[in-house]
Length: 236
Image 1 (tube, rainbow, N blue to C red):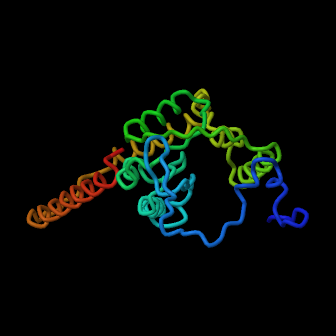
Image 2 (cartoon, rainbow, N blue to C red):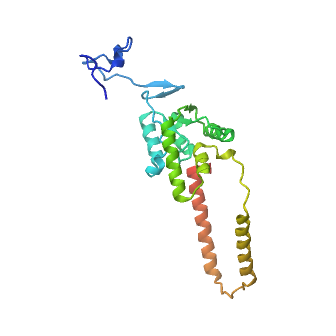
Image 3 (cartoon, rainbow, N blue to C red):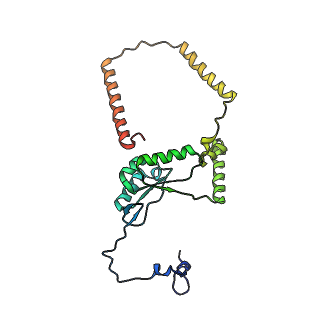
């Protein structure tokens, strides 16, 4: 909301020297030949705007990331790919071309950061945006309270979930198995061993014509779905 500044009804910031001409009223000008295009990082775009990081779009709408990418490409503006996007970056790159930007944070884990940089490089993305935004103390405290509440509700480890949320779980040492873990494993193995010793092969009549047909259908389905998956993700 813009509050009035004396009698000119402009925000106080506009009163600063050198900024007034940006907000000067201009009417009756020919706008038929106006050109809002600009060039950023060697790539021309229709206007100095970009779609920012919208990591949860794929969860909120079916193929939401693809729809945003197509909209950005049609408008001629960049689309920013984040760390929490669901779609493969290679698929979005095919839609946006050089108008695809990649955003990430300075991750504490070096291996995870190297992975982000490598996938970005492999996809052919030219622009990497490093975000240094830091959550305020109040925001972090509120998030931690919510995590603790949900961990107590579902019986989860608060420290592990918090480390996962902050991206530091890769550096944790693997917890040694407890006595009860070995008891559960031994019990499960014992049950399967007992079932195996008492098992008998039943007499089954196999119709090889139907068997051949079912195997053919399964192979065709597997090949078709594999080809479709490769077209969408390139197994990346």
